[in-house]
Amino acid sequence: MRGRIEATNRYHRIGAITGKVFDADGSTVLLDTHDRFGIEPQYVDMALGTGGTDVAQKIRDAMRKSEDAVAGTGVISGWLAVCGRGFYDAFVAHDKVTKAFDRWNDGQFLRDDLRKGFTFQNVVWKEFYGKVGAIKFIGNDDAYLVPMGVSDLFISRFAPADYMETVNTIGLPYYAKQEPMRFGRGVELEAQSNPLNLCTRPRAVIRLYKTAKP
Image 1 (cartoon, one colour):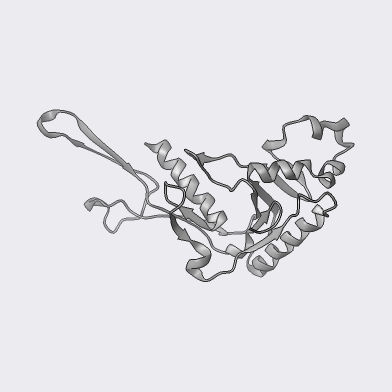
Image 2 (cartoon, rainbow, N blue to C red):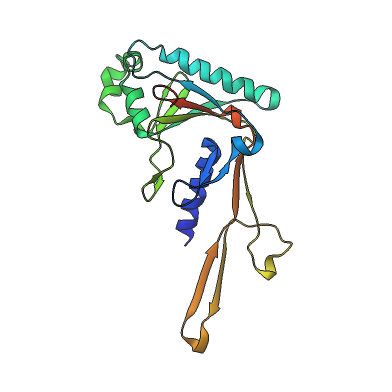
């Protein structure tokens, strides 16, 4: 039960990055942060399908958009890009990226499986493989550039369970309860969590498209 709750919460936390939290069917939007608060999301077309694209400049453009959104509300200590599989494959195969690592450690960049993450232009790039059933957390051709170290950029809050004994109490991450069945035929078990995961500065997270915004 706890494992399933954690998977759902992880799904919702990715929704705080992407701006959309979906229901279990993968298509019903439970919360669209940008729409709810009237915020225009920011994005950069990476043009990874073009060999001559200045990928480093594209990354700097995205970083500057994020920096402007953070402004004086925090200090950025690093960068993380969480990538869908299609985006990641196109990124690591791009000429400007491979050439940057051409002589690194006798070609180790070209030999290793880099999905665990590597640093390019001061950004840690990671392929994100999480999914629930057939529902992927990150779109195949998308990536999200996230500034790290900004205080309270992402927050998680938990509401109390819907039990009489939890009224007017502080919400906890997990609840579990058991109740005897009639005639002593067993015990019913229930577990629940009521999280809300939010990005407090949605324009600081920059969506990166593999080619162009659809």
